[in-house]
Length: 434
Image 1 (cartoon, rainbow, N blue to C red):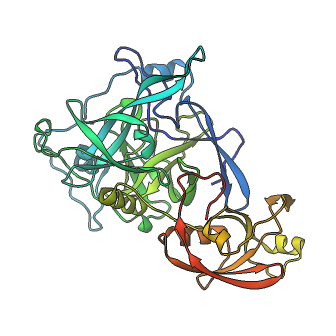
Image 2 (spheres, rainbow, N blue to C red; image 1 turned 120 degrees about the vertical axis):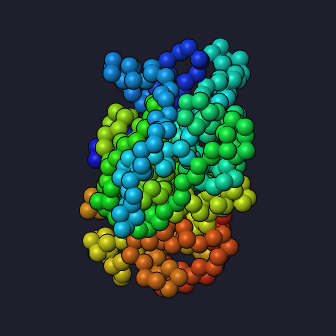
Image 3 (cartoon, rainbow, N blue to C red; image 1 turned 90 degrees about the vertical axis):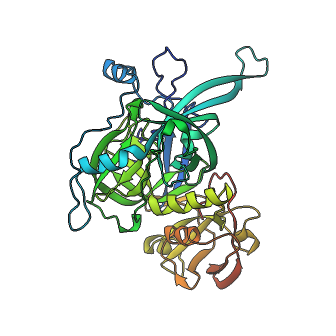
């Protein structure tokens, strides 16, 4: 994903700091990643470096923003009337009204009490600061598991989940995966306060999503409980930065309005199935500007299942960053091949490093693209011809640590083959994307 201008930022539209019962919500806060402006540099697979700033101020100080933010949590919009739910058409599609009626009871409001250590004002060591972040989530099974974003619950010491305006219960963190920004919470589905009324929402198939499909988002923007917005799928296969520096791939872009507090809520198709988890927006101001991103449901479901089973997720790791090789770059570098991936960097002690792959030694600009020539050129991955870095990254994503891979590459003008096992992705990165 490449921003359209230098001051465009990618924002995690989730937590709002609501510290203090009588103070109006402060725009920002909600965890270590959102407590202060943080520059996240992402190496684009298509050739170039895209800068993303996670802003600590979601809104300006204009009167409109202030008046909306100071409103208390709204009623749940639950409709207890006897109106009939419209029937689905022959394709299973429903009206937004019907989807909201069926799905909104499963959408929750998450309050996370966050305690952070900060430097004291007078330099006397560390002091603790307490704040409250809020976001959205949704119940996925009868056991009380709730899916949300990892950044919503990051550093939380206490979690509470609200169903509408009058039911609040405690929740525990089952696990979180910063690489995909997915977390799972758990509540007691038999809690007296819930009155045996826990509803669930099913996952849909995000691979079936196409540009132009109508979508709906339900969440709690600015703590406005269970708000419905609609739109379409604007684009597919976007890439957004994760909490630990890796890229989240195959992300769904939509123009359905998403704002602070929506994070972790469901993006739905017209059958009322979850096809994405609303996670970030791209904006010059930090508020919705028509571009929102959702982690695809197939990825979220897989991660959630692993978190429920073991409390953590292990991702396969190759340990390289690379640049797509184009005919123009090949001609400029006088290379013998016209397609593949130029290895820019190889992480120390990574599977790729142990297999003998080497990165480049200098930076240069060719045809307006920054590259690091001199490294190996990967031409095949597991027997399949390589045309770009995205292809390798997607292939690694589908594998597991310990899986065997075979890479064909050119090193110092000679064709080489390496067979080795993939490793486990480190918890933090600054450059590696493979």
